[in-house]
Length: 432
Image (cartoon, rainbow, N blue to C red; front, side, top):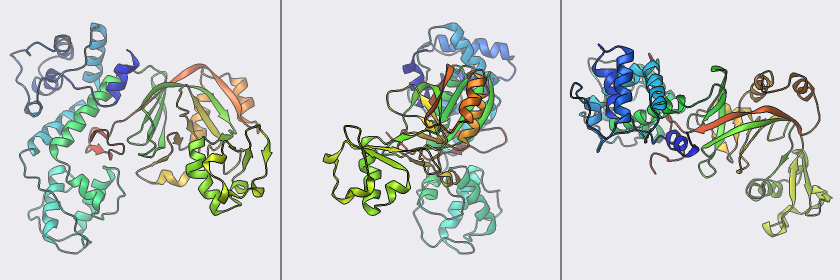
């Protein structure tokens, strides 16, 4: 599969043919093998009418035009995707949720306006509408009377709703919470279907060894020999400096890295801080060199008088507790200077939304991730031991074979026994 095909799939543009979920929900009498054969045939002939023995589920009727996968010419690849779909433990949970959201499309879903004084034990006519919506979405148990009192049951339901939508779980009905409450069932099911099918398509093409970064939910996972060995939180790029979708690889681990600041970040981030505090550069361990490589004394420079025209000055942060890259950097094979790294700013990982970086990916417990990779067959054991215990700056440890890495953007998921999780569309991929 070429990178372009995978890029489309990862961006959520892979839409399933009508038969795929249909088989899962409409004819349980078929054996798994029979289901796989029907799905394979339908996918290979996706421009032909579906079998008359299957009625199209109501869910698919809300879409305009014929739903199909991208052109798949190899029967083995199609069969592989079908097998991944049929063996997915969360398949029935997704199908059931899509059917439920389809039924909710008939419900009145008026826009909820912001009201400033919603708080515990207060009353407002809008509260009953919020309760009704939370009942329909599964966060609040059905009550005999949906009154206008902000009670303890509503507080608990709101906190659960906020948590599964990637928001601060505080029970405050602010603008972000209202935006999620106002998201229509139709929008929810389309996003859930796209993301789920993208996961299936992705899973069918992932190798046994890989690192997967989901930008939208700030997560990272490492698979070795088909088994997940590490899962953690990440910080990704700000909306104005987004982390790109990539299909690349980790080529090296760099211990005690120095950080040479890109010119744009010097202007945007470093100079403003130096202008405010003439001790900032020294305290943060920066060395400044001119175009000829001469080391300059930062304290001797009047930073308030420095402009972009005075650059190129090269700013390099030395290893230490304040180094922006932390203890370890994961060097990626790409032309965008994007990489994974440790960070001294661990407090960011406590936030539910973590788009704070300038494009690179900060990893919580990055040293643990490096240790797992270092103990794998990708790294020579003797070399790893030497580098891991060294204080040498920029000590590189090359992997014997590049470790595939994928950055994806999937904003929703459903697991068995749980309600769907939706993350804010931080880069407006679905809006645009």
